[in-house]
Structures are given as C-alpha cells and as structure tokens.
Image 1 (tube, rainbow over the protein chains, first blue to last red):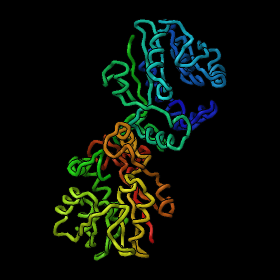
Image 2: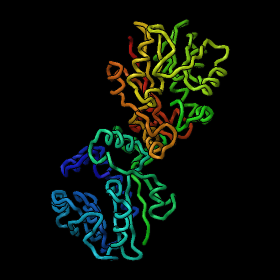
Image 3: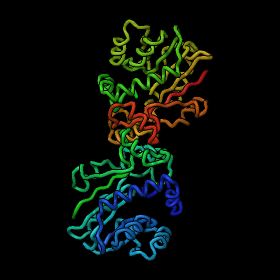
Image 4: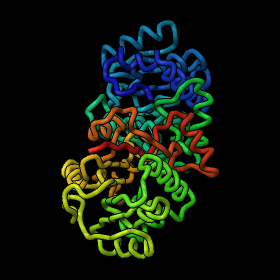
Amino acid sequence: MKDLATTTPDDQDAWYHDPLGRWVEQTEQALLLDVLALREGQAVVDINAGTGRLARTLAASTGANLIAVEPCRSVRDIGEARTRGLPVRWLSGGPESLPLDDATADVVLLITVLEFVPDRYRVFEEARRVLRPGGKLVIGALNVLSPWAALYHHLGQQGIGPWASAHLWTPDQLAQLLGVSDAEVRGCVYLAPAAQPPFRGADAAGMRAGNRPAFLVASCTK
Amino acid sequence: MKDLATTTPDDQDAWYHDPLGRWVEQTEQALLLDVLALREGQAVVDINAGTGRLARTLAASTGANLIAVEPCRSVRDIGEARTRGLPVRWLSGGPESLPLDDATADVVLLITVLEFVPDRYRVFEEARRVLRPGGKLVIGALNVLSPWAALYHHLGQQGIGPWASAHLWTPDQLAQLLGVSDAEVRGCVYLAPAAQPPFRGADAAGMRAGNRPAFLVASCTK
C-alpha cells in the first residue's frame, strides 16, 4: 500500500506519518526484502517508484543499484531528494513504455502498480522485457479479500483517490499471472484499517480472526 | 447475513449447516433479540422472512406473534414447515407492497433486506406505513466496511449470487436513514469469512485487529 486514497505526492507521504502507515510500510518492506534477497551490485528496476520510499530502503540496506522509474515530475523530485547519496538513478517514464533496453535488469519490481494501470498485461509484459534471462520479476499487490479492500471499494464508490478504477488481486490470480503455484504467494498485514497499537498484537489478532493479508508478494524467474 | 452468495432456498439454508454459518446466525440473532426486547403478544412483521429461521427464533423465545411476509412461494413453504406450531402467520407479499393495513404492527423488521431491493427508500417507507405510532422499526444490515464486504464485492464482480447489485451500509448511513445517532447503531461478527473455530476467540481477535462488525442493527420509534 503505497498510498491510501490519495493522489498528490504530499498526500502519498502523509500516510506514512501516521503510526499505522509507518508500521504497514515497515512490514511490507520487510517481506519484500526477504523475497528479493538482493545482492550487492544487482541492477534493480522499480517501476512507478513514486516518492522513493522503497527505493531508499532497498538501496540503503542491500547495496543493490536501483533504477527508479517514475512518470510524474513532482513525485520524482521528491524521490530524488529522498535518495540523494544512495545508488539510485531516477528516470522519467511510464510503466507501459520503460526507458530501458531489453534484458538489462537483474530484478524488476511492480509494487502496487498493476492495480492502477489501464492495461495491466501490457505493463507486465513491459516489465518482463527489460528483465534479463534468469532475472527475477517481483509483484507486490493489494489483496481483494482483505479488510482493506472493503475500505478501498467504499472509497472508490465515493470517487475518492485512485480507488474507483483500481483492480485488486486474489492470491491465485497473482500466481496465475506469474505462472507460479498459489503456495508461492506470500502475504502480510493481517490487521484492519481501524487497528489500534500495538500493531504487532493487532496483526496477530487479525490472523487469528481469519483476515486475509492486505499485501501480497510473489515472484517468478524469466 | 441470511445467505452467502446464494439464491435458492436450499442454498440459503446450506450456509447454516456450516459451523461458521451457525455461529454467525446465533450471534446475529442474539443481538437482534437484545435490541428488540419483545414482549408477549406483540405483533411483529418480518419483511422478506425467507425460510423463517429468524421468525422461528423470535416466536419460540419471546411469545410475540410473528407475521412473516415472503414473496417467493418455494421459500415460504420451507418457512411455514419450519415454524409449524409456533405463533407465526405467513403472508405472500413483496417488500414494496406489504399485504398489511396501515399502522397495525408493534414491531417491523427489515433484516438484510435493504441491501437487495431496487428501491430501498420505498421499502423503508412501506415498512414504516404498517408500523403503529410508537412502534419500533428495526433494521439489520451488512456493513460495507467489514472483511465480509470484501468477499461480497469480489463475488459480485464474478456475478455470483445477489452480490453484484447489493448495496451495503456504513453505520452512519444506517443511522441517517433511521434518524438516530451513530452511537445507536450496534454491531456484531468481528471475525472474517476464513475464521477457524473456536469462533468466540476468533471474534474477539477480529475486534482487536480493528475489524468492523459485519452485521449492524439499529432501530427507531415511529
């Protein structure tokens, strides 16, 4: 969840000033770091990198070389400022047409991107295009069956933020897209949008309550 | 939740043979009994009474006189069989046009009805019409913000059951319809559709996780 019912760069970051937003971000990034298992010097493309919050974490904690692609100038400016001094190169470009050569990336990330693009299969194919053979494509996606999806759908019905046209995912849809088994789709964030701190306890409670995880991560090798 | 993604009478009842369905029904009926506080001999109209599961509970445990109105013949037949020997009178009729005189009922129930009718305000006014001055109108409604709403929306997108056109409610929308304060809207069922037994523990966990209750109950006096 990069943003919650928001459209402007300032708003996108506002969510992370909220204690719950911060906890969710840390939890999602921890899962991504685990799935990615990045090695020093790997070329990692982050598509629709936004204000660079994930790129900063990955660059700072792994030594990988990030290529952050973001179409919106004002958003990219924030990202560049945030990742200054880190091995992150920013490029202007939309997810349907990346400014990158074929088969050049070791890892390509589509994190909460496929929910919000008009043609998700084209974006998926474009991500695969820039990946080298043997490289890893990682998708992070919002789960249509989590308690958060109820909120997103309700916001969408009111025309708030990007939710009206968002396409959320089931774990098996994600597995099918990537050509992996359901068991390879991992998830985190079992608490609900109205959770109160301490969030670790709320998250364990969400799992016990039968909540589906809000954030799904799956990967495949090209 | 009278039924889960179902349309036929048999299917409507199948949900209650599931241990979770039974627990949900008991929990919802307990809340309704508490809100209703029925007295012996009161005339209670149950609109779209379905297969009579709620009418049976209310008639058997309170001594009220139930008038169960249900438009579908095959569903009504099941309800009549289920409530035989109890003070339940079955009538054929749709929620937009009840076969009852003005101002004759002490209590009128609209339990998971307003989600599924084309004109919910007309149905609401029709329910009020048959209520006597000083009588009580009770609405039970599915909460658009609960984890169950995510499942219902997902089923609706696949065209399953009545969910594609269902209108779920927020607590404040329900309060506004009835002209009461938000605080007067009560709720139950905090666990999620994938909850495992024991359900009482899963329900407490759902509350701790910040889940919104799946079933809302509110009432007003005419």
